[in-house]
Image 1 (cartoon, one colour):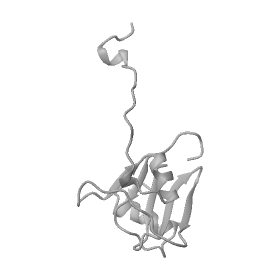
Image 2 (cartoon, one colour):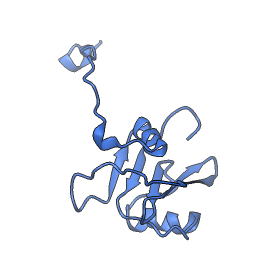
Image 3 (cartoon, one colour):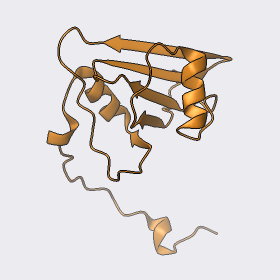
Length: 126
């Protein structure tokens, strides 16, 4: 994760049992999120009361686990689009906002202009 390129960030919808450590959360990734915990992706779990987060990822031959517990308040999870949705993919900025205690529901992304890509218009080189 720290190699300069951000992995995909997956926020689990269901709360996790926070007595679980690396092995238990790896099992949750396989069973609930149907993903490979050693994929290099970052998996974010929350406890029932949303007062704590655990982040699990694989990095350079081993698992890393980060745990953050709030002394006051609760983490404000972003809304899920569908009742059946097991996870939500976050951007690094959204993860940072979540970890800082910002409410993602009330934030909005401003429209930005991006130049047109000439390769999309059939102007292929060669």
